[in-house]
Image (cartoon, rainbow, N blue to C red; front, side, top):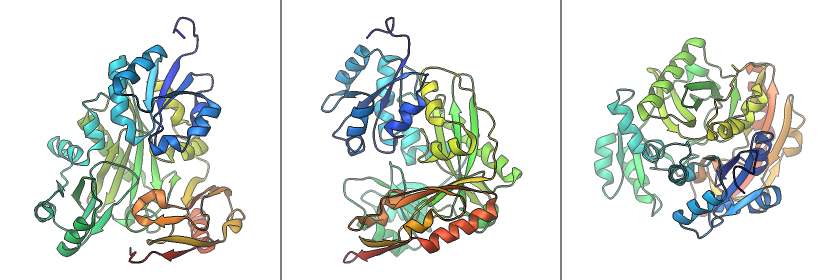
Length: 418
């Protein structure tokens, strides 16, 4: 179909792990654009949504196709924009966009967004933030000398705290380095020690900033509050508005703006995680796409739909983004298993969760027989509780009630530990 014959613009959505669901993408595109899902079904993230994509929308199956062929097929499809909601497709989408002459992150920018060592180097050189960081590689002892302890060892690229560990001694550093999975490059980073008093003792010692970038300007949408991490670095949920004072929020926003400028982000959406330390906010990482779970909570809390905003930006538009207004506190609380690897044998309390004050919906995938491994990071959670509370004190009580009510039982694997 040619662009002259079609009145509604078409956006290619490159699909993979971490993407907004096909339903959410199509709902966001209503009266804005047609959606063409671009899917390599050899990728597990796309394969998991294959039936949904095929049943709901138009799909360009690029399985087994090289990049040149994918460009040709997208040209034939006459797409007017391109975007991905997946961390794992940022680089490929940037190359496709450049070949098609469509707005998106430039391929030259992608290493700054996906490579933790490159990003740390750029932020340090720009004077935004110096954080010790080194590739673990074949000489972990050298990385230990460069970074010191306490430190965090994690994949050089990736998302969701996968295979991320804190180490507090040289012996622990070398042991974790020796046990890291083969075929994945790891970095060691200086540990950013959080100050629980900034957001409050019960809450997470970090936040995220969601921002939208176009040719006209970069606009910060909101500061997203977090619940406290589960060991070692697993997210347990988020809330809007955050519990920060105006002064603390302003410091976070100023740091995020400086980091985005230093990296050279000029298009799309960013999700920047910021640690709250006794010495002020510090960048954990800047991500060049929507944050996981963020669009849902932001839409419920404020009506702002960042999935749709990403489509608008892909089409070269200047989205209208109102200042968030909150009535009470909106939250998502993850049902987090203990920090062990094992098989889920039973789950109690799920039915009772829906009766807690303000709980709107409970999604679970906590079926007995499922293997759960804390090393999978945030992806290891067993479900999500969605709801709202009149204020932060009320939310704290609900979160404590969720923890007391939901009781998963796992049979640890032989040799598994936290």
